Amino acid sequence: MKITSQMVKELRDKTNAGMMDCKKALGETEGDLEKAVDLLRQKGLAVAAKRADRATSEGVVECYIHAGGKLGVMVEVGCETDFVAKTDDFLAFAKDVAMHVAAVSPVAVTRDEVPAKMVDREKEIYVNQAKESGKPDNIIEKIVTGKMEKYLSEVCLMDQKFVKNPDLSIQDLLNELIAKMGENISVKRFARFQIGA
Image (cartoon, rainbow, N blue to C red; front, side, top):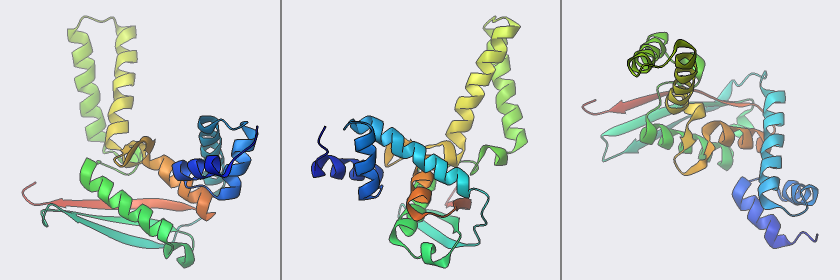
């Protein structure tokens, strides 16, 4: 199948990947746009995994103020070099993450950072709900595991669906940026301030 420039442009718009990467992915998937998107995501994951152990001692602190000064977010995003920290793509990612935190209000960056008290409280609620509905013990465990998985994906920043594009999680966005920039990038922490909260 002939890969047209329009197909390459459409894939670039969806993934933000480089032109040659898009052309190659379309070639490998015989022009199937969805398969090409998946292929580029997998490559992004592979690049992210290779770079995961590199230190991210450079970066930016990005702020987002919303609702007439009633809500504000600060987020620290790290990278390996000052050069990457000054790129438009990196700064746009940091701004998007800050805006996302303002909109969705996650509890922690990753699952490991969710306070154990919160996890235990949620688990207890789910166990009691399942017991009250008369489910057998072996089923209760499966129900609780499923509900905990859903809960953690809703409160952890990296697992949340991006507000501007619910097809992608924040982790997907990060993986795409890592693949594009060619160095490790991490969301280190955030703080959310709201008047009256």
